[in-house]
Amino acid sequence: MKVSVILPAAGLGTRMGRTQPEKAGISRKQFMQLDGSPILVHTLRKFASCPLVTDIYVALRSEDMEWGEQVLRPEAGSKPLCLVEGGDSRQHSVENALARISPDTDLVAVHDAVRPFIEPATIEAVIEEAMANGAAIVGIVPVDTVKQVHKNKVRATLPRERLILTQTPQVFHYSLLCEAFQRAREDGFIGTDESSLVERLERVEVSVIPGKDRNIKITKPSDMDLARLFQAEEAAARNAS
Image (tube, rainbow, N blue to C red; front, side):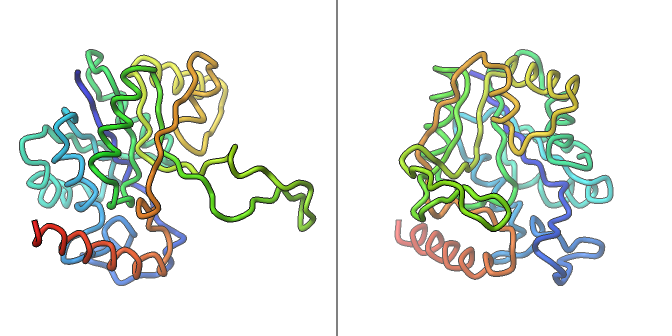
């Protein structure tokens, strides 16, 4: 089984606001330091260590390519790493990476570059589910009551047991994901995630693998405090083993 992973890391991270650059020209969230390494590096390490992953593609802005060669390539270990120029949107970045993936690939997994706390068992579970059924994502049931609103007025209370908060990785058969991106391009459709593109095909039912609360997406300054706590816990667990 050949499994390729795409890490889209070309975003500007506007929700993070102004941050101190970790190197000249870079101040975006995926490059912020966490326990001495950029967040993107922590994320890359999780997939580089997964035995089911065959190769890794990282979409970067053109001005970050040299940095990627110097910093990311050594972190990939024995896994082939391909740096791809990203686009103006996540969808464009993933599509650029997908175009570089070999057609003999079985599965393609897409993971947010700023979700460094994905657990190895979850990566393996979602890959195995996608291999069996064609498409699988990671998600958690919301703990808060969810309301449907129009402007500032409540229109309905939605049953939580029928809702999930979507995480990544999202994993799909290679040919299915290629078809989904082609259809989206033809229709001018912009999705919020890869699953939304695949769902439009109505070819397969997308399975959901239970995620973890700690699989956070670091998008705003307050997330960094929680990220530092999780990173310290992971370091303690490694030292204890």
